[in-house]
Length: 98
Image (tube, rainbow, N blue to C red; front, side, top):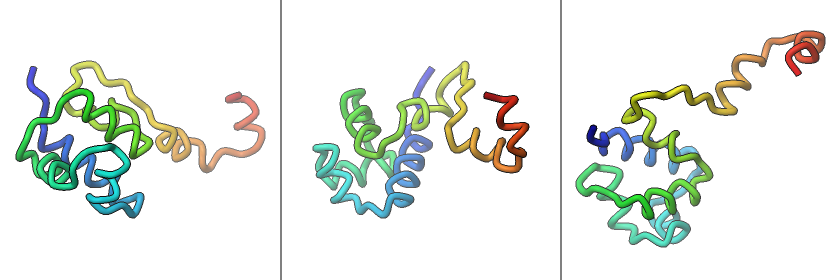
């Protein structure tokens, strides 16, 4: 099983942009050269696990959020997914869920 570096790069780029970060900002936060962030986002280079962890920590995301397309068994549900699912619940429904 190979990692899909194109998908990982796209997820990193999307997470970075949604947080209003430049490649330089993310590079500084993750202790990665900005040019390497560019290469990672374009899948022009493979990234190591320590680099992936540093980027995930800097972005405040989990590793499985970044590599989910490469996982065979993926039952990952994010807080955002849960929020979307319960957004229209009544107070009584929310109480029953808890």
